[in-house]
Length: 107
Image (cartoon, one colour):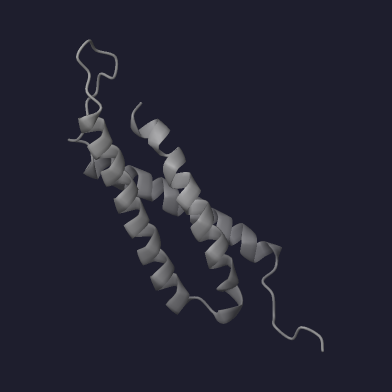
C-alpha cells in the first residue's frame, strides 16, 4: 500500500530553517545576556581558574536545553501534523548548535 501520509515540501523546510536560525540567534542573545555576570572576561591571565567559566558554560547549556525543549513542546502542539516530522531533526541540530554557541559566548 502506498504511503498516504502527506509530506512537507521544500518550502516548508526552508521556512523551518529560517525559524531555526531565528530561534538560535534569539536564544544566543537571551542566554548571553542571562549569563553575562558569570565567568571571567580575561581568559589569558596568570591565575586563571576554570571554575567560573565552567559554571557559565554549564548554565548556558542547561538553559539552552530548557529553551529548546520548551520550544519543541509548544511547536508539537501548534504545528499541523504534516510539519511535525521536522521537529526531531531541528531538535537534534539545535543540541549540536548549543555546543557550537559556546565559542562566540566567550569572545
